[in-house]
Length: 169
Image (cartoon, rainbow, N blue to C red; front, side, top):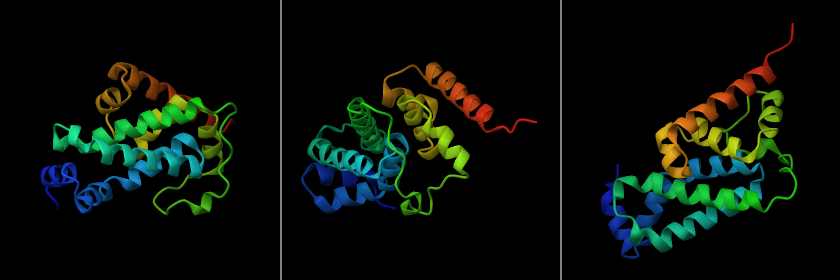
């Protein structure tokens, strides 16, 4: 496994190969979180591209190389929020769910529809927690909200999904 500190320093000095190695450790999570939050393949790809460009330009500012993953996810969260603000209508339905990677799939049509009815912030929080595997403290620092608020929102989101997906008897 590459030493993250070495690659961050090299990337800060302009080494594109070192940055590519860093990017390879997070690219799937970046795209999955963006896609889950934005529900549009093109917007997700744009958000990830913008994130990578900004990260490459400003990697010299990263003080703690061990925080690279959280740092780049913070940039992505800002890009997602900015993109979501430009939406005037609810996000369009995904055109072709089969184009998603094998590691990212919905269990059922009902789940996809229930997640689609969530507001943008809920989608972002849920994707960071479920897809990204971030703790409430990490999400808190990335999104700038209290960790207790993150936990309570995630609990409400999951309860809402549970109620929508539980069959009526």
